[in-house]
Length: 142
Image (cartoon, rainbow, N blue to C red):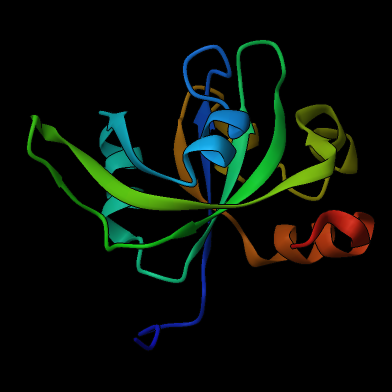
């Protein structure tokens, strides 16, 4: 199966007490659900197999802690007409989490939704951020 566009990166927030990167690692795969914000739902619906997801722990952690692979196209949630779901597969935990504080301190991403819209749970990641993570955290596996 070929990817119709270049691989895109998204960020998906989760409360570690609800579903953590460790849960995803244990489960290997999951259906990512529970998203209802219209902007976040659009991001999920745009996802395609092969895209990557930065898993972000919220709830006081405020850091990117791992990486997942998108297995299916985003689709409407059969349980909630205003929501969307996508199938994810665990890829990796990061040896060193990338904190929101580090992201903000860099001053390079002030226009990114992660910095501007703190409550948005799912979003497209700018390519310049992916490059920054690769450069700043070369052992991250990104």
